[in-house]
Length: 306
Image 1 (tube, rainbow, N blue to C red):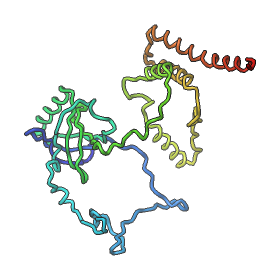
Image 2 (image 1 turned 120 degrees about the vertical axis):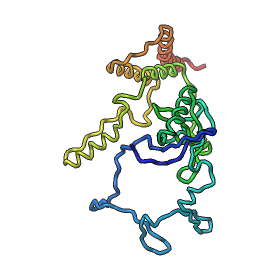
Image 3 (image 1 turned 180 degrees about the vertical axis):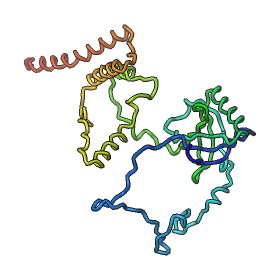
């Protein structure tokens, strides 16, 4: 079990549940060291004090807030722990809402909340069962790492999980990323829906949902360690920015997705006859449209001038 991140209590109404916060996730990414490329020597960081013009140890380092005029106000760990906030030592529940009301963009890393001892087990289990039965998540306030945050409590298996939530003003306005208006074709929308249906899965298990980047990086490191030839990257099927026939690309994607599901033994969703007839008509119309346009252009070129 990972080390404790925070010790405090869940507070809702007059009920207080002593808990320990544990990280719910693990990072398996490969960590690189910075090296001097001339001789592969490790490059290290040093802590330097500007006032004394000397290197200091990590144990000599504290926190300070720099004012606009350059002065620094020191803030100690004891002062942070004694902040006049009810959430400094507690996760305070302030509301219960349906999970659909939470913008996924605001949800941060996850933690497990572990009850501290037998006394905390009963109110902990009551809260877990209430969240599960009501199909709700709890919104909480808590203060960690120098600031107060909102959090989201939800049931995961037999435990309660906590996710940090970004404040509304920490989410950027998406208007700047919105695409310009374009004319959409119903047949293209229909093919895209068919592609989604063909790619739908019940869960996130299987070879498609593995960390291929880390696996490939391990293969490169092992090849270099054993002085073998490095593995070759596969050729990309399409280059970024390459213009394609959207309708043809969607149709080919649907066929490939259905074929992949058949190979893995997954049931391929079948369309209703009416939907199949409608899509066939749309495809026929989309195919004939360019031909009619070309015929019209040829006729206008051959017409005598008036």
